[in-house]
Image (cartoon, rainbow, N blue to C red):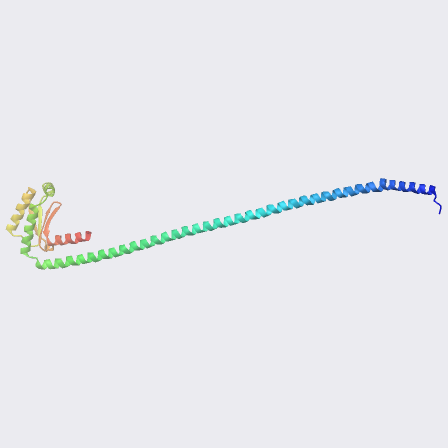
Length: 248
């Protein structure tokens, strides 16, 4: 087969033209599309990397926040437990104080009840003792005891303390129009004379003396000078004994 150089040359020219056309209208746009596609892919990859970084950062913040929430929850739970324990201790202390106060109140009430019962028993015993003594002394009372009680009264008049003696004289001089002498038994003249002489010496005045009988005295005398009462009789002595024991 014989080589046709003109055809060969035209083929070369056609090939070169084809290459130029491909390069001009196909290869460059293709490279541009590939470049744009590569840029888009790189941008998508960068965006994906950024999203992944943001997601990782968000996840880390979320995990950190969860850890903080857990710490806060534990702290709140611990604080609440402490508050509950403190409130329980406070209420237990208040309850214990209330119980102690109630027990002390009950103890005081019981003590007062026992004391009142003891005082009532003592008062009853004293009253009964005074009544028994009154009956016993009433049986033993008589003119002889009356005379002895008069002697006792005269001795007391002669031994009055100065302040009482002064007050008695003042009362007799200012307010006493008369002296009242009550006795359980009638006084004879000698007894009256002795009593009036002693009263005159003590009071330094001589108001009239009135006598009366008072069987309630049991035995002895009661001398009334104004607001003053001088007594040496069984009734007053028994009352004084009963009152003194009751006050004690």
